[in-house]
Image (cartoon, rainbow, N blue to C red; front, side, top):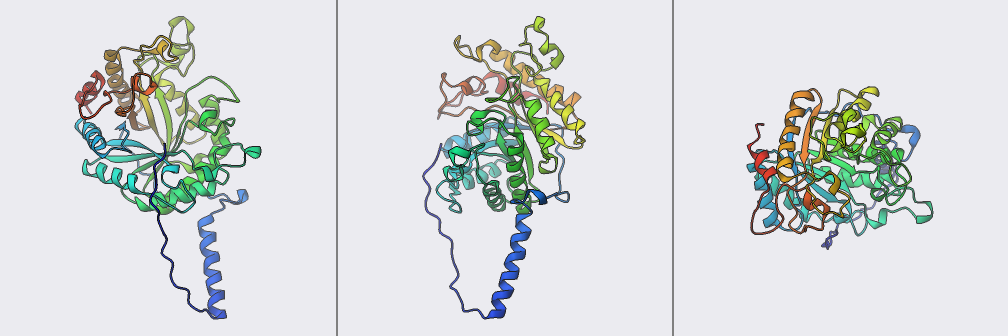
Length: 397
């Protein structure tokens, strides 16, 4: 989705005559400035190694909900109040790059993000922005296209401007979503090294502007299918580490749908075809532990994990690809609260933010997949919640 952007103009100082000495000095200063900012972005032989930026630890766990705050401020404030009243302290919001810098590089429309940040602050909520959805002007030529962005520096520049504008106000940024799916990678085969190039650019851009902001790697889609359309999340994460991802995120992002399994079910049991949970290790909430094992294997165990999407679908549609793992609304409520309890009891040394999907977008209908994962009913002005919301509000935190 895109929004119409009002024009923004840069103020340019009137030029003044410069003598030769001033020109040389100015050139040297410009060269130093560019060299400091580039940090090797365009030179793969001189990649940055940012080890000095802070990485604050989260409580174990912290509580978040995803919402759709973009279009209607009345709905947004209602939904922020729902998150606050449930005792949750984070809101996750999708921010499409093309919705801010969609026309041309350097032309920004901050209207929606300014409002969202201000509204979230009024409710005392921490903000996680999910960044993706590149503008058309960033696309590579079709004949050489292998991913969504021709020049990772463009993403780095955008992330830098975004983090600079909201320094100290947006606590965390998620860099892309499910890049192990071709449909999220400009219909190109998933490419862990290509994603790491984007992650690196965005990380350095954010940290250069707001060193205290947390950068979270993309949540990967749990899957066992293979290229060219999909890459299993465990293989993709290994590919990220092999491509040098470790210095360029503060928390590992994971997606953790529960499918039809209760949250305590192990990946070994999910993979057992006789138990009827799908016959693959990723068909359970605790598949997060498989991703954690890869982190420790690559010496990255000091970092925390952020669950960027967690939930259970209640989809009753017989022709839906999600129907086979649907649970009842009562099970959804119970499983979500038990998932938080399990994480608190078993993952306390490494778990950070856990984000529930989701407060419903008021435009969703029963034909939308997301409708069935939601913990509230879509609509405005009437507010209706599902059993899962009530259970999460009453849950001990």
